[in-house]
Image (cartoon, rainbow, N blue to C red; front, side):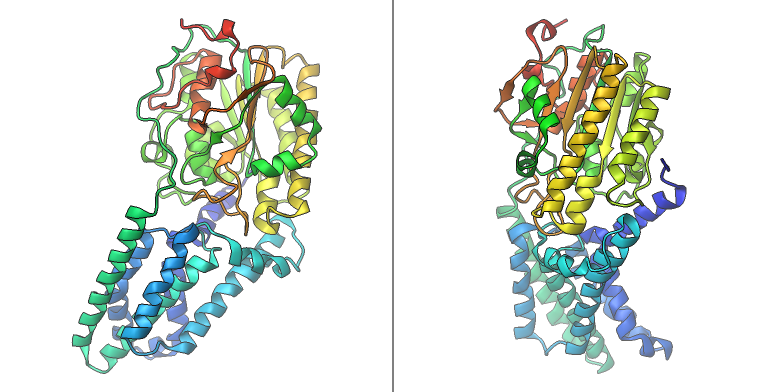
Length: 486
């Protein structure tokens, strides 16, 4: 099983510049303007281009700072209408180029060429992907309903200012700054009064149960089925995972963190805290490495070992605690190859904590959508692979005193399997535990958060809680004999 190469790690970070909505918008607008004015730039007519960019920067900053996900994106058309009423008609040729380039990038380059090279989707994937791009509601570059009004306004303003400068009517730029004030006011009001769906965070550090001096378990194994939407999991035919649910404790309202992006979720799950503290605020990582202690650091303090097996971008958070697998493989081979490497790690390293990221479900959600049969098939494939893995460990006696945790890091919304801003299907994730100290058949209704993963693991393995762990131990799942203060 190939590990992610250094090139793949760098390429993954580069791709996030185009995948994440915040950096994509300015990159795309600048690129479109360069193409449209290419001949003028070649002839040395650079001054209006650069001054136009400078005068448009406030709007770039606004759209970088504020996300407009979910229903908020509908309000992005108000500035477009305002522009059409106040200023001269925009350059329709420029708008046409921008729209054409956008759909070429998302539908053909990303949805067809990129996914064919990476996971071997069909060359006709564009016949579905264009519909997914129009439905996607999260603030990625694949959210057409957010990106279209953003880049159309930026193109119109930049080009309009260039026209004013070319006509030596610079005083007219004052009206643009008045317009910016209106757009800023609209954005502030929308986000202050309507952006109210972020999960409530724990304010205090973990202290409801003291970490024991001796471990309850020899091992804890966590299998994260990346991007597994909860109701689709219930719809899938998953006899082995269903059996584990009945043998253990299921959390019916386990909430992911905000924003629900993979790097963010994993960082929160295995530090016990939130992006404002661990520093990972999106998949686009500006500075490598979490800022706080992780569960791996806690285990090292008591002479125990931990290992995470996942794709390249998890290295951005956890560094050498991650063994990577390449994400460039056929969509039907990805999870099989990951599980093969997981078996190898268990045989050769035998870590006390082992975390495995299965990526097939998330990949198919992004490339083919979550409301189609292919998505259920990937969940069912994960069920069979988990069964094979667990049964092999049982035959070797490695499950005798082990707690197994199965969960998703986030769900996925409709469209291109979007996740981040907690649209329907993203917020609550499957989460259940099974093991010798875990209650059987328990269903926990109370809302809990994935940040409780780390303190629970620390409690089970007799390690101190990481420095910024804020989630409470999931004590509802523990048998009474395991649930006593030290």
